[in-house]
Image (cartoon, rainbow, N blue to C red; front, side):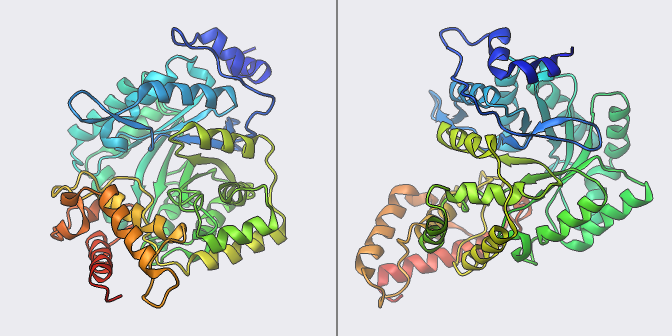
Amino acid sequence: MDRRQFLKITGAGSALALAGCAPGKSAPETGDGKVVLRTNPRNGDRTSLLGYGCMRWPMIKDADGKDIIDQEAVNEMVDYAMAHGINYFDTSPAYLQGQSERAAGIALSRYPRDSYYLATKLSNFGDTSPEASKRMYAESFRDLQTDYFDYYLFHAIGRGGVEAFNQRYVDNGMLPFLQEEKKAGRIRNLGFSFHGNREAFDSFMKWHDEGTLVWDFVMIEMNYVDWTHADPKRNTNADYLYTELEKRGLPVMVMEPLLGGRLANVPEAVATRMKEREPDISPAAWAFRFVGSHPGVQVILSGMSTMDPIIENCKTFSNFQPMSEEELAFMEEMAVLMKEYPMVNCTDCKYCMPCPWGIDIPGIFRHYNEAITDGTFAASREQKDYRRLKRAYLVSYDRAIPTLRQADHCISCGECLSHCPQSIPIPRELQRINRYIEKLKQDTL
């Protein structure tokens, strides 16, 4: 019996005992439920339907005031995840300003390597030279403390179409290099994550169909809003992407099932409708169930930054119930309702950071979106409780965002634009929010 079979029988709680816990730590309570597994039809991998996205590890300040990952918290969350059946971990050299892979490597290296699946990416957004790209690839092995990757991705292709893909991976020789790495066994599955229009996606699928570049899996943004309501200027409807992948038998890895947390903290009108239908199901559980109800989905990534969402999500996925046709229709109603709110399509990935002028871009967008979802958005002077809502927004904005990092300090340099996977016109959105704030201050809304 190999190690992976043993873990299936004994559970991850036994793996903790065999791997050992950190000094002074006790193994977390495992409970009875484990996250459900799905079998990859192409290779037989039994991956957890709920995967751990390592883009939102918790951060703390070090002695010099620098933001660093809270490794102790990461270890505890990984322990809980492993104990409850999560066995798929997805990271990138670009996450958390280059710190994510190392934190994941420290936490996961305490477990047998064949007890989990590891996914990372070639995130060569800034320097596409072969030297820099190969260095990034090699450093991922070092930081993740592994000698192979289960799933390796060309990161965020689609923006810029085939031309951008060629620049990042073909002209510099990285495509044949990675294909050779796959033959050598250091990469077990080669795929890509996609952000872009249908034309670009169709090109990548055509390569697969012709055998020019055969993919093993694909990661797409998929949730009940983007299913048929994705912004056509920035992305492609997920129903099209999913259908094209399913008919080719390509496993679908899902990112942004909660739209950067926005579908876990929905506007009051949406939350009320959900509670009326099922009082005990959270908005996040509704969103996860929608995605997981599609059988071609192999893994649904969630960037869980604290223990609370891990516990809740493990409960959702330990007794997973696919949606009925009636429930799927209800989610379409919720998607239409969500589109009525003027939110910024930011998923809080922080790829735009650091801003050269110090603007807290994701913080400004997050504060604005939360005011809408919390029902505390001052919309007009005719609104009930307008004075109270106006003051609450301005006070909370000053508390959440330091003065020198607020939207009015953006000079529209455009440095952030090429880094945003959602293709958000960031300077324009910052200007829009700043105009809103000025109207509040001048009482001209």
